[in-house]
Amino acid sequence: MPEYEDISPNFRNALIQKMKTKVPFWKLLGMEVVDVKKGWAIVKLPYSDKLAQPDGVAHGGAIFSPADAAVAIAMLGLIDKSESLLTIEMKINYIKSVNEGDIIAEAKIVHRGSRTAIGEVDVRNSKGELIAKCLATYMIIKNRT
Image 1 (tube, rainbow, N blue to C red):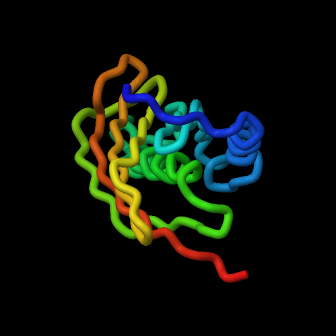
Image 2 (cartoon, one colour):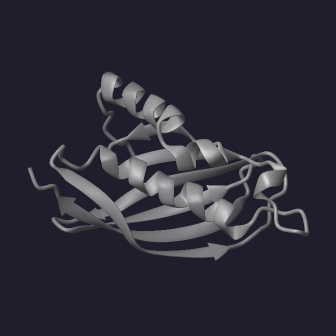
């Protein structure tokens, strides 16, 4: 893994806590931030039956969600307090199904421009096997004050 710059410990801890307790979608699914640095993050989603398709494997959305979330978390260390983010496009290739353990998304920001950013994501199972590969484009929005 390339070296990524640490974010401040206070920001890191507040971010992890906020995502765990204050974001309804994250709470619904059970997603959590495992680690975060500037331009890099890992988000984990424990597999459960509520994420399954009728055939007993994870729904594609259950794999997509931590991938999308990981890019957003990786970006938070690269934007100013006066900016926010919005997913504008995401492509995912599903490689392998998962029906147990954790769904682990590792995002790396490969480009950060003034208005857009691009993140690559490897999604793996608990055994470290690649289950999906993603490419996401985010819009960087200047907040009005």
